[in-house]
Each structure stands twice: as C-alpha cells, then as structure tokens.
Image 1 (cartoon, protein in one colour):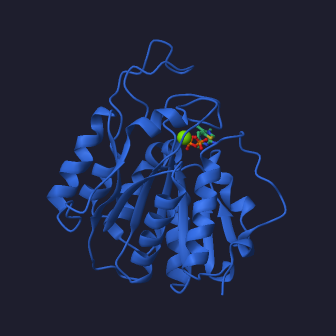
Image 2 (cartoon, rainbow, N blue to C red; image 1 turned 180 degrees about the vertical axis):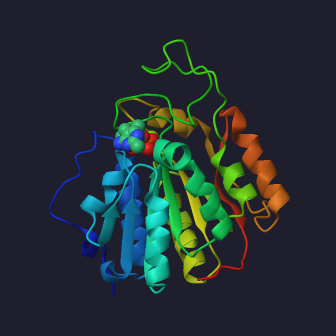
Amino acid sequence: MVELKDFSRCEQPNWCLGCGDFGILAGMKKALSELTIGPHNTVLVSGVGCFAKLPYWTKAYGFVGLHGRGLPIAQGIKLANPKLTVIAFGGDGDGYGEGGNHFIHACRRNLNICYFVHNNEVFGLTTGQYSPTSEKGRKSKSSPLGTLEKPLNPLVLAISSGATFVARAYAGDLTQLVNIMKQAIQHTQQGKGFAVMDILQPCVSFGKNYEHYQKRVYYLGKEHDATNKIKALEKALECESGEKLACGVFLVNSNTSVI
Ligand SMILES: Cc1ncc(C[n+]2csc(CCOP(=O)(O)OP(=O)(O)O)c2C)c(N)n1
Ligand SMILES: [Mg+2]
C-alpha cells in the first residue's frame, strides 16, 4: 500500500500563500498514491521557475535541471530505466518558451513519460514578465505598452506534434486534477506514449486569480470523442478566446512508443 504521507517531507514549500502550485503538488501526490506507485519508483524532473521547486518538497527521486531542459533529462532517465514512473514538470515560460523546441520533439518521440506544465501565463519567479501564454495586450514590466503577440496554444501544438495523450486541468479543482493526472500516468504505464497536461494555475502575485478561472473553466463532456484527432484540435482551438476554458482529456491515442 502507498500512502499520501509517503511522499511528504518535513520542509514546507516557500511558494506564495495561495499559489496554484500547492494544488498541483497535492494532486500529484494523491494521483501517485491512489495508483499505488511508491516514491522509490518515481522520478520527478523540472527546470527553472517557481513550479520547478516541486521536486524539493516531494519525497521521491528528483532532478532540478536548467531552464527549459527538464524534458531531455526526463527522457534520458526513462531510457536508462524504463521501469520507473517519470514525470517532468514545466512552466509556461520554461516549457513553452525556453524549452519549446524540446517540447515539440518530445511529442514526436512519444516516450512513456508525463509532462505536467504549470501554466500561470506569466514568468512568476522573475516577478511578472509576460510569457508565451500571456494574452495579447497584457501589460507587464517587460511589456509596458502591452504584448504584441497572440498567445501560444499548447494543446494545439501538442496534438499536432504527435503527443498521444493531451489534456488540460485546473489547479483549483483537486478532484478533476487527480482524475486527469491518473489517466495521464496510466497512459504512460500502458506504454501508449507521451502524456501532456497543461494545468491552468492561478498566480496570486503576478497573474490571474482563482475567480478568473472559476468563471471560465468547464469540462469536456462524454460527447467529446478523444480518439478523434480532428475533434481534439477543434476543441483545443475553441479555447483561444480565453473566455471559456475547456478542461479534460482532449486526445488519447495509442502509439508506437519505442520504450
Ligand atoms: C537560460 C535562462 N534564461 C532565463 C533565466 C531566468 N529565469 C528564471 S525563472 C524564469 C521564468 C520562469 O517562468 P515559468 O517557467 O513560467 O515558471 P514560473 O516561475 O511562472 O512557475 C526565467 C526567465 C534562467 N534562469 N535561465
Ligand atoms: Mg509561469
């Protein structure tokens, strides 16, 4: 039996009070323990950012790497020991900006690892610059007149690049977060390939608050056919206005994973 406390350390996270990262940390521990995956079989890998401190505060194997470079490390670990459950963590800056190139090719390569991206639409650790997922026109210390670019759509990028499990969750809804994380982990355990989860994360200091997400988040219903790539793309494109934020499993497919 694996219990939640098996993943706990005595140190407390130093994230801002109310940070969505707390929800993601809690969700990950709950998902692993409910799947009876123990700390001795788990490796957590991250890059640089507030989110990247997650392995510090979890009792499991961990590696905190360079900015945007979590995925190559995680893939190397999986190749060296395929029996391990490997979860890479990214931030919207880390994973979709600095590490964007690794992201695309990890989707194509489809190794059996999870990628959980803490998407708070901002560079949190460096105190509030705009990120690849910030909305157009966002004013920040690095864009005083507002950003000029449209935000990146990570779901569309993951689907079109070949990832076989693509989902979105919300850090403020633990029940659904755990449910979707468990499906992602199981996908990799069944040898079906790379599982990407974009996780909407409130940033109480520099980004959007819980109210913003609570008003917009809804879940894909049973009518959504996640085995249909075109339908998955359509749903992912629908979210671009930012007014309605669909969560759930957009795409699930089997694949040709090498390991
Ligand atoms: C190569 C490199 N470029 C820039 C930085 C500075 N830096 C540290 S954290 C960070 C932003 C992190 O943002 P994100 O990935 O969204 O994580 P968050 O802090 O929001 O959780 C940046 C630009 C760095 N450490 N290394
Ligand atoms: Mg961020």
